[in-house]
Length: 303
Image (cartoon, rainbow, N blue to C red):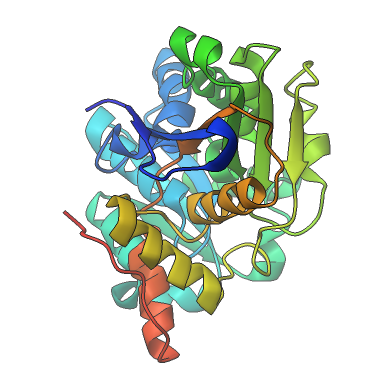
């Protein structure tokens, strides 16, 4: 499977063209940007002789499932440090954790308070006492090797054809890789899935170019939050284009791009490439939560 650029079949004013890079098609489990982020980390873990990968994530983490899938595919034992002790008794209700468990991942559930300290030296030392030798991959997968993998998302043709590149931003690794590999004449727009503008400081640790900006207007209440308007948009967009979008990252970015086109943000004849970072597995978990609230669910073809 490979990534393709797909033109959005909508007529926009002023000669604007909109395309989507279908990174979600790269791999059925290690989807989208997770495939890119893990590529060189897995190579490094093998080079250093590690047999175990350990990482961190929440209830419906794309990253947790991707690491579990990568472990099964490339021969690693995997350990997931999971935020929320209450989830330990609810694995059967959680499609993400259940699938990761099926791939052989061992879980270590911690309180939300303890999870905030996951990057502390003492926390990591305690993990090493419990699980011995492991290759540590940070939450979301972002490190220098992940950025290196994400630098391979844009092709040479992409760098020449598109005036703008847009991407959802969570931990900043994917967006940093895009910036590093971009043509400096291109404008890169990162749509934050989180409240707050701190992501700019994170990204500056990995990039030196200045042809980018973070947009903080379309998080719909914060990470993992959705509204009726967003769900309706996802379903309408899928019906119109047959392209499924996840509600945590890519869906919010798409909503933002279309809103900015509507409001005249882009100049005449702009050619915009949106990066579909995958994450479609999270739809099941979101729909479970929406059903419990008697809300409209996200409709898409799982196959």
